[in-house]
Amino acid sequence: QVQLVESGGGLVQPGGSLRLSCAASGSIGSINTMGWYRQAPGKLRELVALATSGGTRTYADSVKGRFTISRDNAKNTVYLQMNSLELDDTAVYYCNLVRISLRRDNYWGQGTQVTVSL
Image (cartoon, rainbow, N blue to C red; front, side):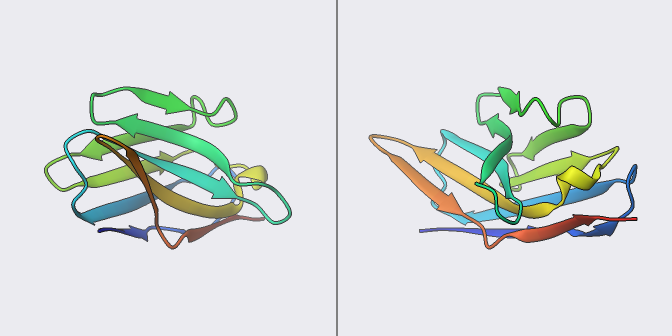
């Protein structure tokens, strides 16, 4: 089983920064993708950024140039550095891990609230 524990959400003004962390424990496998999704009120959950164990990084167009995803494989932790935050970035942010072996197993964290407000 895999557990994901997120931290780092909070309240910030537009233009500010936050850093989210997600620590994974359990059998995460050697080939996996860790990433962040977000869900704003009344909207569907959407991809923010992904980082594969092979080093590939993927970003939603809306966050390119502002957000940076990184991984510390020794700590099984993924980070999301969010700069130049905008009102539309307000959402619950969820950590995700996809373990890839003979099948794909999908795991989610409990979510952390990010609120960008004046």
